Length: 165
Image 1 (cartoon, rainbow, N blue to C red):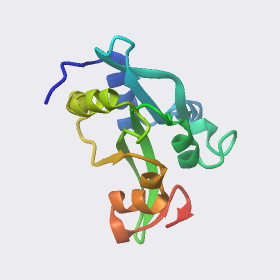
Image 2: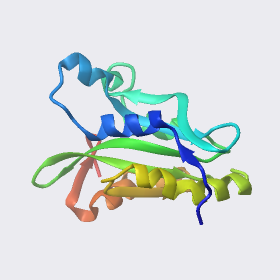
Image 3: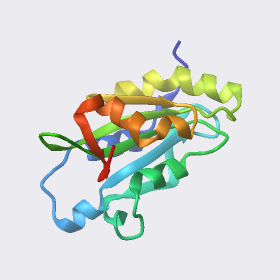
Image 4: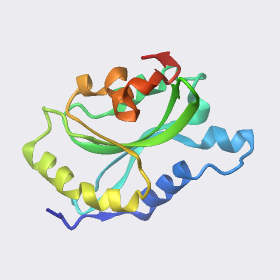
């Protein structure tokens, strides 16, 4: 079921910037987004960037020690949202970074909000071409490292964000 919700141009630009890893200077890399949260506009007609809800690559190891834990802490307790997270993980053979798309629909969110976000998910996913990993989470228990490792590659994953799984 489509909701008719539009996706703001800034949301598409952020996705593109996170997806395309250009050869960048160290300063440019620090400004790259590690995670960003998107929400519906006040009139519920457009998916927009949620102000102040982002993690920059340059913050990791400086002001943020565990980026995934910080990301989970940024999710609203009583409302839904979408998010992109640039996941760093290791397999037995290599180290990888891949984008994950999240639909966050916590138990305490109003039913109407859950319905609007669920029906609008296709609109944002169509703009996010090439996302390999998708996760719908309904509570913090869905966002532990083992669950995320399972979504990224199951038993092949040996570490996520520098921590063993």
